[in-house]
Length: 213
Image (cartoon, rainbow, N blue to C red; front, top):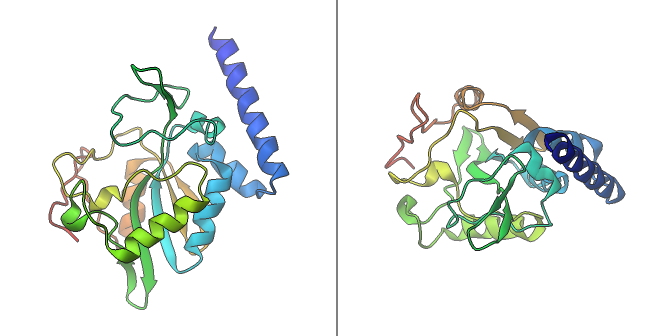
């Protein structure tokens, strides 16, 4: 059964890659989707948006999710069920959803370095009004994405309920038109440090940035 499941997954991924090529998606974005689990067309969206002096750090779904974006809706924040090895989650009510992308942080290049774009409700609350420029950016990106963003940046969610980072998390960075894969939380912290960005998580992955802006 495991062999059959793997074969079906491989067939689905090959079909998606053929779809992307027919759509004109660059081969480099298709290759990156194999690592990140993101829709290859969505990788292009983030790359192009970052050309405007922006940087996006994204926590990625399971690699197997890449076959399912556009076929299933991304899992919203309210759904706490964990995704399986397929990159899909089936709720008790029978709904099937694909693992979503999580924005970790968004930055704008300036003469002084990277300046944070705070993308969360005021004060880092779970719900509430976003700043107009932050809301406009999310709306613009979501108009183009196959799998829509479900919430603001995790780094900006100042709450004990912040999920932190897990040892199995992996990431992608889109900066000034370039994209790179970051395979582990340790590697992501190293990237933050090199870019002089504050890393809001302790050695165990617990969020420790309450009150930071």
